[in-house]
Image 1 (cartoon, helix red, strand yellow):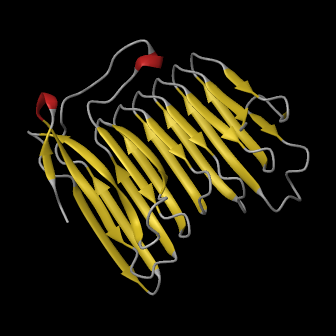
Image 2: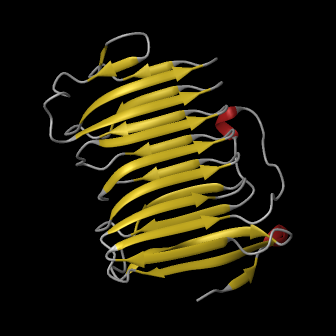
Length: 229
């Protein structure tokens, strides 16, 4: 069901409610245009693959979406229409998008997630979720990723043109981190030993069942890898 309501500054909202339809695996591809993007887990309905709200300006048109499910495998694609209004401001910590996309995913589904914004902030709270691969990027906003408490060979790529990249790693997960910044700093928790100029690794990474490989980069901001509290 699609519902639109008028908001301030000619911003409209599209409701998202995609049924699960028996999916056990999903490829999720989200392109939020120049807006902010937040992804976390569904808490109120296990019969949905995805829910949430998608804002867009009145000169953009409805976001494009498609979903296909076959033999337990779903592919969900969400993409902003048009280009909208470029939205970019300094300093990097205040980078922000013109619209807000808030999306919740079914935590029981094994998901491969691609999350993109042209210049807004991207926030992924993957706590309690089952994810196999995550790619998050933005042209100029900040990226924040909270990793799940358990993960088998999870791969995470996070890249921004100018903002900060902050990754929170649970204490029970081992990690290998590849981190670079053009003009900012790389700040990695002391739990991860420095292997070379760009690589850090926890002591038990090689033989661990729960582990993640992280590639994080920014052109002008900081890369921060912290332990999830």
